[in-house]
Length: 385
Ligand SMILES: Cc1ncc(COP(=O)(O)O)c(C=O)c1O
Image 1 (cartoon, rainbow, N blue to C red):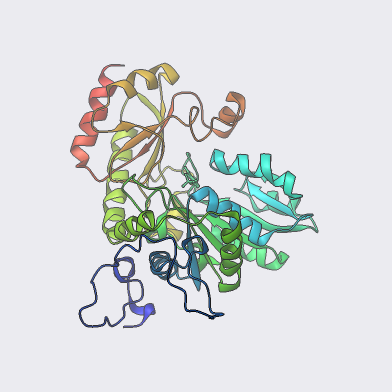
Image 2: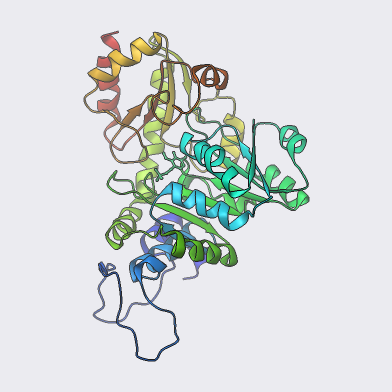
């Protein structure tokens, strides 16, 4: 069976299906070892877990590459580590980065607080109009960074025309695809050069590890590997093993996240406590057409603007029992958070308001619980407003 003919579920379970030696373990054992016996006098590659060549790391990277349709991939200790090293592999002092303005707050901090120290200039651009990119591109621009779907408004960017623009300008397109997972979107197929994930989210899916992924061409991933070896962001074998295990159910989990996301958004759209629902699967979402055309599923993330503002969010969050008030997303548990205190705390209230994230905005990561129980939980919480 070739890689081309296998679907996302098969890839998530097997990577590229291959014959197994007799009596070999069916699942990958945990190689909980920092180092490996070295042949005396050998000039071959040294095996050492910080180098990213522990068998758990190698096996998981192969699966991640297969899922993204990439030549190569690498698993790192966090999503932030993946974002940092992906950019360090692509950019040099004196280079300019164009970054979407609609991104996770940690990534914004990395770009605005750290990249200047490395001699990399960053301009933030509203990403919904190609004219904005064109207007800010410079001779020194080497890459564009986007996140899609965006956090927390679930805006969906049309990757293909942007990739064409990048190709015409000779610059790289780097995409954080954490919210989509490779089941709902594979940006490399649409022309992006590099894809990043916080594996902490859907890829692992169980809220029990921190991890990150970069996938793309072999030379760039090799450069990320070299950087990882000296900057020290390799992942622990046990966390790596847990992600390989979590990945096996990725496609079925995403099916349920997509179904729960749609059902929850439709329910919330009719509730008087909610003044706006942000979900690309709703026909009145501003990017519904792009989402329907470019995604294989609308996802499990829903943004709600509560009619009663921040005070209503406070009351509601204390009342929830099935859903948990916690940052992060993409796990089997339904999690709810307020971007003003978490992912977007780095923005001022006025900046958040301007982006459409007022106080009283709550972000819901639908888990895989029974949708009737999730809705009953929110019904109950809203009834106390
Ligand atoms: C879209 C996105 N990218 C990257 C990250 C960073 O990932 P990590 O927490 O695994 O470092 C996050 C974290 O919330 C995120 O939401």
